[in-house]
Structure formats: structure tokens, C-alpha cells
Length: 194
Image 1: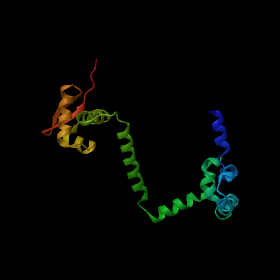
Image 2: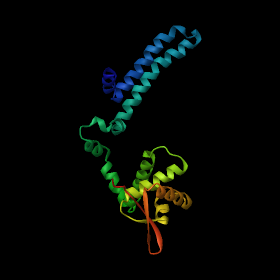
Image 3: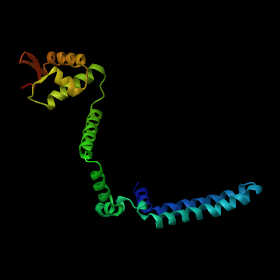
Image 4: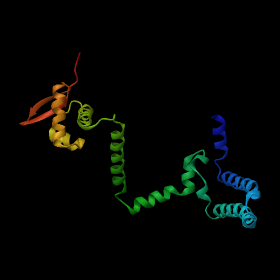
């Protein structure tokens, strides 16, 4: 495994990859040439000659016209140097100027991604068990806070009936407590003390 990792470190340079690709094409061309029909050998020889040449010329044209596309962040000791080379800071500043609500939108997206991540970390449960787990986890996370059925429905995203059913089961299992506040039934997590 270490030998493979050492080889991969040596092959991280784009020129090395192109050199390997061109070398493999030359070796394959040499091995295959005797087995190609005589009428196709002339075309195949031109392919073996021109393909690596075009590949290398394309690489050097890219290198001369847009050198930045060949550098990866891992090629730099400090990633700030990579960002400076790519002028990322300037692009971000311009983007912020052009879109004043960008920060709020990014925070909203980040929060949505966190919710998806949290959802994916849950154990694999189906149906009522999933809703029950979600409701209990939500009450645990808001320990000490009493919540109405409507609040739990809004915050967990499950249906009114599913949350109500889960709360009934959790109440029977003595995992939640209920109280009445302002003529409204509210729920909270109940931690058993031994």
C-alpha cells in the first residue's frame, strides 16, 4: 500500500501524467503494430507519431496560455498562495458587491445542508419508529423547553397525526412529560432519575 501511495505522490504533476499517457500509447503502439492489417499500418503509424505530439503541444499551449489551471491547492504549502494565484479573494469580493444578499443566502443553504447531514446520521428507521425517534431527539435537544404539538410538527417536518401518535407512545413509555399552559397541552423530554 505504501508503494502505491508513493507512486501516486510522484504522479501528481500534470506533465508526469501526460508523459505516462504518451509513453503507454507508444508502448501499446509498438506491441500492437505487428498485429494490425497491412493496409491500416500506415494510418496506425501516423496515429502513434501524432497522438503524443498533439498531446504534448496541447499541454504546453495550456501551460503558456493559462498556467493557473494546472496548479492544485495541495501543490502549495500555504493554500492562501493558491487562492492568491487564482485571484479567488478578488472574485469573492466582486461577487459580494454584485449580490448584497449573498451572505444570507449562503447561511440559509448551509443550514439546509446541516439539516440534511443530521437527517443522514440518524439510524435507519421506518415509518412510526422514524417519527418517534425524530420527535424524541428534538425534545432531547431542547431539554427543559416545553413545546406545543404545533411547534413539534413545524420543527420536525412530520405530519400532525404522526407527531401526535409518537408523543402518545413516548408518553406511555415515560420518555416525555406533558403539561398544560394557557389551555394548551405542551410536551417536554423527561429524563428518568435513578
